[in-house]
Amino acid sequence: NAGVTQTPKFRILKIGQSMTLQCTQDMNHNYMYWYRQDPGMGLKLIYYSVGAGITDKGEVPNGYNVSRSTTEDFPLRLELAAPSQTSVYFCASSPQGAGVYEQYFGPGTRLTVT
Amino acid sequence: DAKTTQPPSMDCAEGRAANLPCNHSTISGNEYVYWYRQIHSQGPQYIIHGLKNNETNEMASLIITEDRKSSTLILPHATLRDTAVYYCIVGRGGGSNYKLTFGKGTLLTVNP
Image (cartoon, rainbow over all chains, first blue to last red; front, side, top):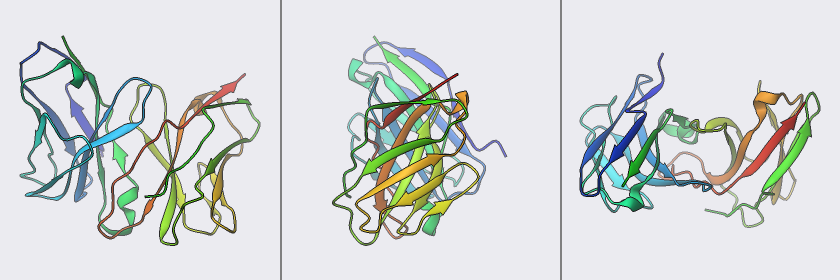
């Protein structure tokens, strides 16, 4: 299994541009998550999904959108990028039920907005 | 969810046991203690979790005090590859609460 994969690994955006961060997992996990990590800080939850067609906001959702049309994919959309969105973005997944806290993370996408 | 307190940094000699403490004095009865680590520039990695009994797996041991207000993660024979930020997280297992709250963690540096 590849686990959780994310693309791209790195990206530089200009202010006002948009992009989609891709996340795919091959573990058949129902739950998926997007986090961001600013330098020297812990992770903050942006959005999460408990299954295909179901998404909900996390701690810092403003400026982002998500969709979950399949179990495997959970893309994160940035509209009108701002410098405050410069961060490392991690996607994660977890199995349903008691194992939901055993989250498996992807390698991250480093985004710079200038 | 209950908050946790961890020292910002610790050092350990290679081959020795690394004992990482965590205080969670406001933990409630149905909340678990979870440990993750993050090696530089990588995504966090799940290590272990427990409710009130001590737990051990191939990576580490988790010791939870009887009053559950603190815990210790033990890496029995630390290697250089164990240098990472270690996060102690408290949260309810299963059900509808599945959101991890990451603090700043403890930077463990394993020295040769």
